[in-house]
Image (tube, rainbow, N blue to C red):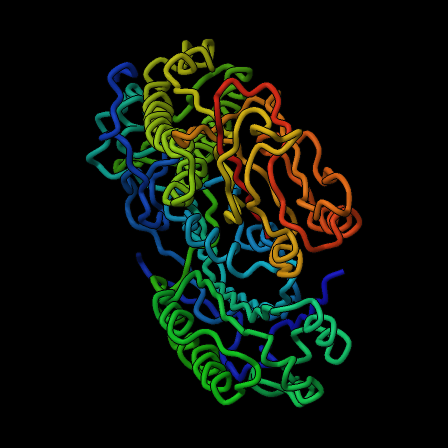
Length: 556
């Protein structure tokens, strides 16, 4: 059960004061076979109010309507602050909405930055944390329709319609203006800063839990700034020396680069040196209580992130030309076709969202220096193919309106043959960290009954470090190519002194990607190996290479 301390409307711990709520102000405001990577682009410009959107292709279009008054929020509508203990990697990604569908260009979260934060801030077996989570909602902007509900198309787009106001060239019109318009947007900002304690030993962690409890008890008191509490005095100095404090953070809206200056400059200390820790907290408190507040200008929408946007399809709006003639945007006169079009729009936008997410994940892990050669090649292939797939899907979504009837009839068959397939096996956000590796013979070494490698893994150290929740294995050729054939098996045995009998098997029939928890490893290792011996590879099976590489990776 997470310990969540939530405060609504007022930031109780940190003295941030914003102006009141509620008041608003008015201001005016072709060919798939030849698709290449140069056609790929991810528009990170934010979609503005009354912006044309090609919803099916997740792209920006022109603003094709005469100006209408926009009602923008002028005062902070809501402030939520919470402290959340011991967030895991997946829980942090969920709070950042990483992996959710892309709704509009400009709402794209920097997936790489978010994944790096979640990986660094997440707890493991030998760490604890509390996360300061601030959400500031400015409010929602809307088009003012109190006096006039109609929208007027700019005269330069009249040639797309006949004299009866019927759309005669939907393909080129949508290329210019899209098929929907942004009619409202929510502006907000989010700040997450994690205070993480890393313990050098399980003994230090147990003493901390027994004397203090959670990280929140150690550093935060109601009504005052973040900082060490007197409870830390209950820890022995020798224990405080074994506890390292780290800061990790991410910010959406405002000026995230300023937050990174605070987080990246001198962001760790040992608890036996509270003077050094206090300097860190002084910078942190100043940033939260002063700098962050000053970045959020209620009169400047550009200082806020667009949390979400609502769009309206043209066929659901009342639209006139400059002569007052009502324009008809009936994409189809058949109710069944209309339903199928809505399904197709949702399907294509979801596909594009997934391709972008996979592209971002591949980019975030490709520079890991311990990847196998074919892993790196596979990720490079994913990056190339996702870029092409996004271009294909966007081109198809545009061409669909050239012959809508045929597009809806063909549906997937219209673009599926042009999409590139790739292996999503390599898209692992939590790739872990390499612990140890060894070159092994494919059969027991000469003069050995089982052993096929030298000693290489100090399991005692891995278990006592408590940095990982589990370990998993990779099998590679000596040319650094991944071997995914699960029929290739091996055992791990511990090297007991000869006078204590035969070496026991602590992991039997392991294979590529085989994963085991640290608790299970500890149980087997302590019971069978006296918690002292080194470990080696033994009894390989179904290996068609003379030798191979075994790698042990840890996951937090």
